[in-house]
Length: 332
Image (cartoon, rainbow, N blue to C red; front, side, top):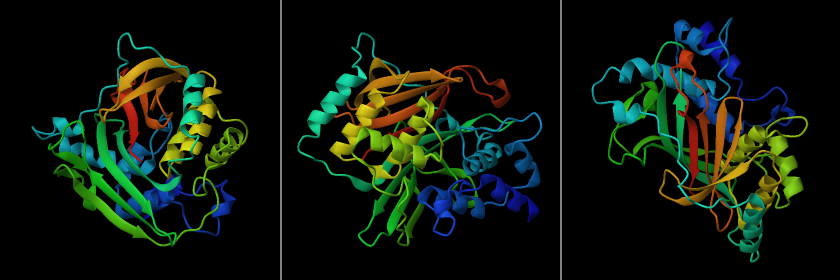
């Protein structure tokens, strides 16, 4: 029991500096993380591999719960002869040769023009495909692909459907942690299908995002529990949190595009085809051993995806320069 309690305390799904959650319900992300932790029974040896200790840096890019699932899966799936398609990490997106980069100022202008009639409207909920790299100290990294659909109802309750699938390899088996026993499942396997009771939190990211760039920046800062201005990587992380809760309307998209246009170090690089086959404009920020790529619809400014890749080898975790750390593709 002590091992499970220590892992749970270390994950801490409710930040200590989030007083608005002190007497209220957990938000969506916290509920998911807590549910995963409570469904696992990791051993002390596994805990020692995952949690920081002397000489062991914290993996800032991964949730503890995801790391638990990833590490549990290594022994179970990497020994099989037919598992390569399920555990292979996606390659980074490649900018089309000869494509013309679209400056962010121009993208913001297009987004504002597209928002002139106010449609589409803001909607709470999301539909996202994600790939997350799980790592441990002594096993090769693995990638867990899943698709998540969150829909909110008029009574403030919501449903969440999570499916194990990878659109890059339709029909092939996919790695899943369904039932607390990681194993290969059929493409499209339902990991969870849940209904959550009403929640009326009025704090970001549960509250509606504003359609003004300055107010949106303040909203994203609060959503990240950060005092002071957001750095560019922190802002991109905040955008991911926002889009995991909301499908933006045209006006909110225009506000976000204008905010990004004023972001230091985010540079246009040209056209890419994302992992769902959509054409987009890419914007890149390099720093701290990671390249962040933002993919947008060039006509409306809508964010299509976010990709993070390593820019240097990390041999202690079995990753190389160019390996994809995480990728999210939003589908509305």
